[in-house]
Length: 77
Image: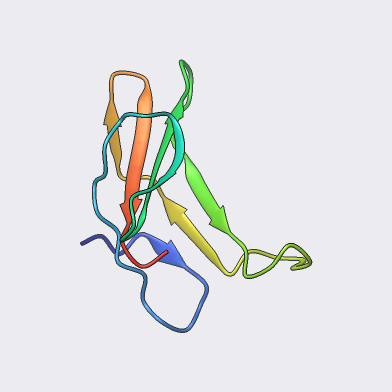
């Protein structure tokens, strides 16, 4: 578990995830996020409670990188 989460009142569990497939992938228990970037030195994932929200409810630093793919798995999303 990782603590690189800001905002929100309840903790979000953050697991390493996988570098594939790219994008957001629901597996029935949570979501794996994988993003490709040749030049990024840091990637943050912003989560919103609704399409109308003006600010993110959670901001999560993607803790893992394999080659040029940043990834994280959120079991509670």
